[in-house]
Length: 198
Image (tube, rainbow, N blue to C red):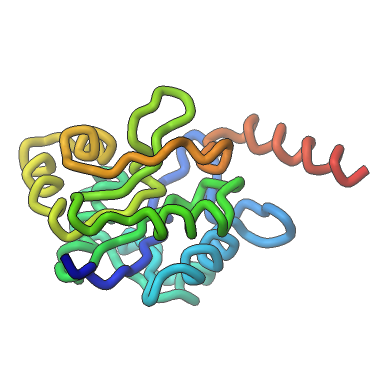
């Protein structure tokens, strides 16, 4: 089976309510997390986009990158994935969230290398519960109808889509997919970085 072309989708349309400020703008290693994630994603995909909501299109950081604007109501990450599949139905999508500060190039390369185009998706298992991690995963064109049907039924959880789908599930990649959602978590991470530097 020939593989669909692989595009990249960087999810950065969230409201960051728990963080209290835009997670994409948080500084890790001397640059905004959005730029760091963008570099990682574009290194392993032929074409990539940032997934945003309409009111974010003129935000300077996001405006500097190719954009895909959500065409679905604010239903979380599912809106971005659905919109991407609608825009390029022939493509597979390497989807990553912008709040994964420990994600690295080796992890993304391993995901792409393990891709099985005959499956609906290729994803890592969570190191916490063993379930598929949807926000660092490779979504094939064949999964789009399943995702759309669940959306139309009022279910907007990408993880539940992967649980029900025929996917290739990879072992957890250590801490690479741990995310930071609150100001307290971010402050703790920054303190840890300072301790390493001192």
